[in-house]
Length: 139
Image 1 (tube, rainbow, N blue to C red):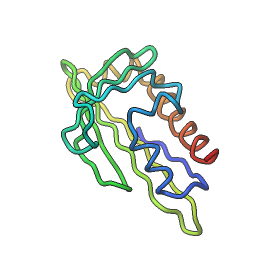
Image 2: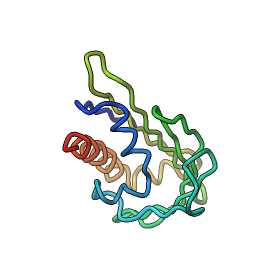
Image 3: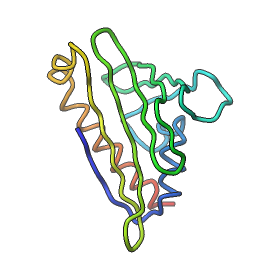
């Protein structure tokens, strides 16, 4: 699934918020905690985080792509399924930013996961984008 949003906030502001992974609970209700598993390090490929979400529980996410100021991807694995979530921000012509969030499930249990939590996951991605936009525009 892919969702997009636009904001009047500049890409640097959006990136600073989105890339501050442990701050997510402060601006979106879809994440209750994000704990860095190697405290004190900067986010980079290989960095790991424990993420708790309402109705989804806890998962460990590992950054697999990190392009400062532009995009990052992280992945979480469970028996039979790999979750891949990407986050990208680009400058819009005339100012502001476009945000793109994607979430995909891979593996033999991906269809089961889609049936079980697909709609909830879609709502969460949409809420996260809307919350990020609101937070960045508030300043």
